[in-house]
Image (cartoon, rainbow, N blue to C red; front, top):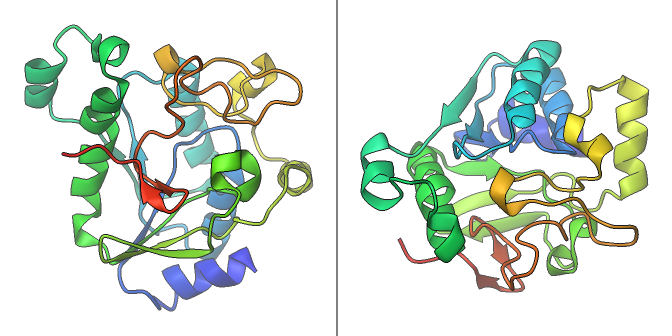
Length: 220
C-alpha cells in the first residue's frame, strides 16, 4: 500500500506538486527507500536545524548516496534570523518552542510554499500522541500524507532487514527518535520511541504537525 500511495503522489501527481519531508532519523530509511524505487528524482526536504547530531548529517549523506536520491534539498534558517534571535545558540534552553519555530518550522513552511502536498514518515506506534493519526490530513490548505501510518515496529525492523538498509548510528546507542542534540536523549525499555525528545518537559512535538486534533505549532 505505501508504494501505491507514493506512486499516486510522485508519479501520477494525484495531489499536484508534492515533496517528501524527512528528518533522516531512526526509521527514515524505509520511506526513503520506497520513494527511491518509485521516483528517485522526487523532491526530498531535509531541515538542518544546525543543532543536529553529527551522526545524523553523516547518515543523511550516506543514505542519499546509497538510495540514489537525486533531489534532496537541505533547508536551513537564514543566518540573519539566527543572528537576530539566537546568536549564542542557547534559545532552546529558555524557549524550546521558539527555537523549533526559528530553526525548523519557519524554514520548512517557506520551503513548502510551492507545493500542494507533502509526505511524512509518521506512524501511530511512535507515541501516544500519534495513536489516532490519519493517513491523509488537510493542514493550512495543503494535503499531508502519512503512508506508513499503520506500520508497527516489527514491520519497520523487517523492512530494514529485507532490504539491508543502513541504520542510523545513534539507534545502537539507545535513541528511539533522533532530533536535535541538545533536546534528545536515549529511551528506556518500554518507553515510546519519542520519549527521549524534550525529556523533562511537557513538549512532545517540534510543532510542525497537528496532534490530538489541535495544532502544537507556535505562532510565527
